[in-house]
Image (cartoon, rainbow, N blue to C red; front, side, top):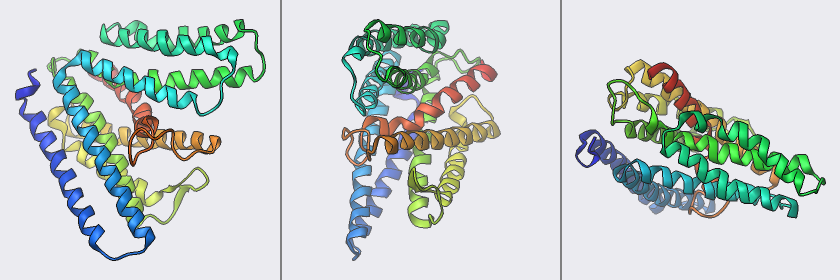
Length: 315
């Protein structure tokens, strides 16, 4: 597929740009309305998010146009940055340094090499089996037992979420779907769009209609109204994209619904980790969105489920 001339890709990105443009107009109108400090903070937050969304849309477009290898490299970099944020939430001991060296500079690149070479067998088991067993052994060899279980569990958890789970996004490019050869980049785009739409719409519905928080002690801004409105609307919008997928309209709706639900689960779980560590954001890399991990938390939970369901039923 030559993405430069793929009309579906062009129209899809044109629609996203139009929506972002409409959101920019709305933010300008809201900024001109009188209001107190809370209103001003809301407008500034919306504008900061819009700036980040413009950047992310441009990056996604360039990634898809550039091809598979560039996509794999980009997600490897994203995993590296997210893992760095995750690990730096709590201080590490000297005994962890060599295990961390292996985690960042050997295990992560090697895992993405398996993705890029379409070696599914090793991609599927390398981190959950071999890395899972190797990391605690390497930490134990350092001879430092203080808080050993907590330290090794943190590294393993970060590696699973930030690297293994996220790598299922570019791994969509390796799926051999009959009658869909050369089109897999659209699956990646479908996944990212549904996840982002769900996040945005949950935020919008939550700010406008939200009354009852789902887990007030973990994420007080996540409300039942925002969750239901955002998930259902994102699922319906995802179903409208069925022509760029190998699924039927009903299958597309079901998968979009599953993606939105898993995205919510990822956001909630990663928020619980932030509350446990007493921080608001994982970092400050993206204006209006915190760190890299704050932006991909939903993808980390949605991507592996979407990948394996597609692989099991459609390949």
